[in-house]
Length: 452
Ligand SMILES: [Zn+2]
Image (cartoon, rainbow, N blue to C red):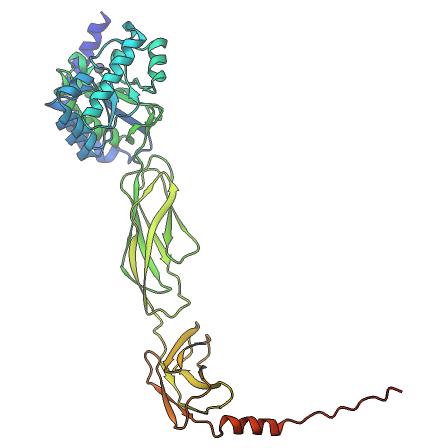
């Protein structure tokens, strides 16, 4: 009797729903509160008894289009019959679990038979080129202590369900929708059992769009299963998009940080930027997918004319980062103009001689400016300190050059007109220089103390 009542109620609901849709659509803008996506909890969809040539590919395409994760519990002999369909499900990114070889009631089997059935299905999935999960679902939900012990013993996590719309028993599409939508509970474990491999599966397929749309509108998110077989939200991918790709050094850049799907829990995203010591943290509340941030780029110490930097997301909780974005950092402080002064020096026949080539900047800067000079006397560096405009490049004239003629040495610095250093030959020969050096030495007068 009870069975009969259920059926009558189901049929009534099915008849009323399409009619009720009209006034509801009118009233919707006034009464429907805006529900934050994912704020009401998770729903994991599972589909059993496939793969089927007719229903499974259409179901996979629909779920892909709607970006809904799902787990497919496949029967081994169906996988063997249509490995290409099983492969298509796996390639589309859906998890695949083990539903025994021939849909046996495992409580009527010996441990050895259970293992054989599960392993044969596992082998069929491997032959189809699929990496199966370790989820196993006993057909009919028939699981006793022995079945559980055997499944766990060979490394499987048994997964049952919390919602069974009895689509396998020939329910109509509206009835399947009503049963699923009526059974999903806020902040509870919602694992829905439906079928893609039974005679009535086309009815299930037709129910999917309404189920997905309605549950999303009510604030539920769709989820896969975690290692324990519990619904777990898919991990959003976080990406960064700068307002502009060319940014002045030390300037600010506006960034949009985006998640490719709403989160079901508060999520933190860390921003990284090359050359920055601090990280910026962006917080997403439940259901948010986009945030704006402003990031200050570092001011370089070195005098770079232009540089590249990258901005990306890292770490954070519950997100996976996408590739960082390259920024073109333009020096907002153009390099000062360097000019060089000429110099002259008398070479020494005895010691290397140093000559100072003056360096001058046309203005001061707020950072040290490095100047590199090249000449036949070698490569020399100097630094014009921040706030200063002057420095010298110190070149060394080696002993023995020039021998007898005046030598002009060109000094070059990138971006500056070359300077000339006049090096005159030593006025004396080495011997004369030694003699005159000795002549200038004042020998000390030593007075011995009287010892006795
Ligand atoms: Zn089944």
